[in-house]
Amino acid sequence: MTNKLQGKIVSDKMDKTVVVEVERIREHPRYKKRHKVHKKYKAHDEKGEYKVGDEVIIEEVSPISKGKKWRVIRRNER
Image (cartoon, rainbow, N blue to C red; front, side):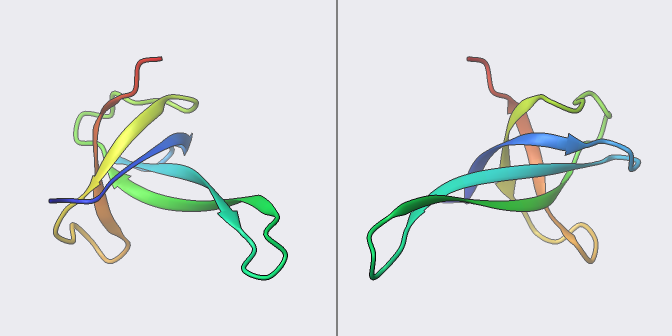
């Protein structure tokens, strides 16, 4: 099974690439307080159809370039 993540597009300035920010909630191991953790992933967008602000689902694929190992599957409809 491939890894899938849900996030928000924060940049679409590159050709065929978007930057997706994934937000997770983690718990501190000692103090048990929960806090948000953000991480950015470069994802492949072949047609350039996704824009900044879109909620998308990305999946892990074999490396496309040095820093791009994810691909946008679809827009997340809420």
